[in-house]
Structure formats: C-alpha cells, structure tokens
Length: 241
Image (cartoon, rainbow, N blue to C red; front, side, top):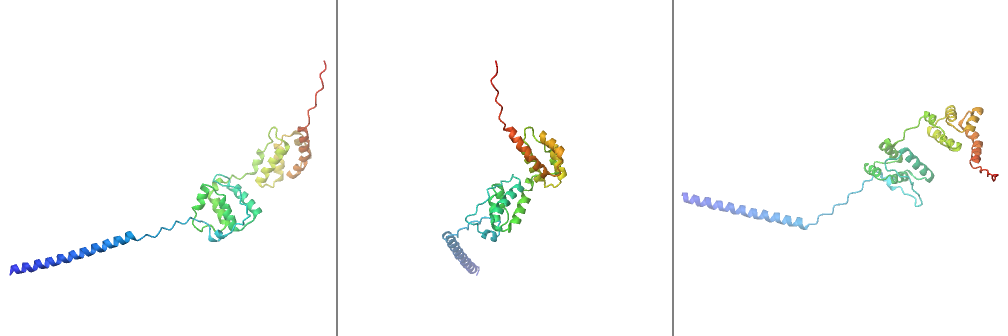
C-alpha cells in the first residue's frame, strides 16, 4: 500500500516538473522573441531641440524691408545703456519700421554675453519693443552713467591754450547734458570759468542776461581770435652793419 502511494506521488511530482519545464521553455522563447524584435525595430530619430526664441510669434512674423539698413551700434555689456538706446532710437527714427522690426534690429546690436542674456529669456516672452527696452535697462542698470548735476558747471574752466570757440562748445555741451534752464547760473559759471582776457573783460562790461546772448556776443571775438592766430609773422629786415 505504501509502495503504491509512493509510486503515485512520484508520478505526480514528475508531471509537475514537466509542466514547469514547459512553462519555462515557453517563457524563454517569448523573451528571446521580444528581444529580437527590439533589436530589429529601428528607433524613431530624436527630433532636434528647437532653438530658444524669446520673441512672440507676432514679432517673428514681422518682415524686414529688403532695402532696410540696420544700426551700426553694438552693445557687449560694458557701454552706457542710455547712450546705446539713444543711438538706436535716433537710427530708427530716421529709418522707420514696425514694432517687430524694432525688436529684431535691437537684438542684432547685442553681442557676446548680452546676446546670451537675450536667448536665456523664456520663449515668446518679449511682445513689444517697449517691454524689450525695459528688460534691457533692468539687466544693465549698473552701466548707466551717473546723471550730471547743476554744480558740475562750476567745475568748467577754460584750459590754458584752449580757444574761446572750443571752450564755448564744451561748456554748451555740458549745459545740454544738464537740461538746465537756470540762465543766471549758466551766465555766472561761464564768466567764472573763462580765461580769454578780452572777452572776459567784455562780459563784465556788457553783463549778458542769458547764455544765448553770450554765444552771440562771442562770435565777433572768435573771429578776431582766429585772425590773430593765423596772422603772418612780420619779416625782419636785413641787419645793419
């Protein structure tokens, strides 16, 4: 009886082992077949990464006229940002162009790290030139030249050997930078800084009220100064024995 039971258990064990073997063989064949399919199937090519473009689609669609000449100004990150924007505005004021054209041409003035800064902006972020110029100012605010103050005029002095014309032009340029309208201060500081004797004495006598009046009164003195500077040297006669 025990021997028969052992025979039955042994047969059942052999049957289970055979079933497991077939299952393993089938699983191995399936894995091998799947691996072969992976090897033979060609993976789709990875699409190239799109270049970043901070401009909106409307700006990207703006067309540059074929005859349009771009600005020659360049900004590498160390120049005065106000001067750069002023030069660009002046060029565009003469050349014209849409909002999108302004954005594209201003981008063309950025070089090196400044162009890297622009490319780092989020895609589609820039929608107008006003916004673009504001971002530019905020990024390079440390490059802004210090604003001149009125008392800078008191430091204006005519150099030794500087002509009246050159000093007048240099003084006038500083007045333009100051945006000052204080005529009394301009007249006082000009009289304080001038060294040209004839004209300085003339200003004391005529006592001009405005800087414009000083300019007009200086014309005759500048002509005289020019003639004196180019006056020929009088030749000396032969020396007597």
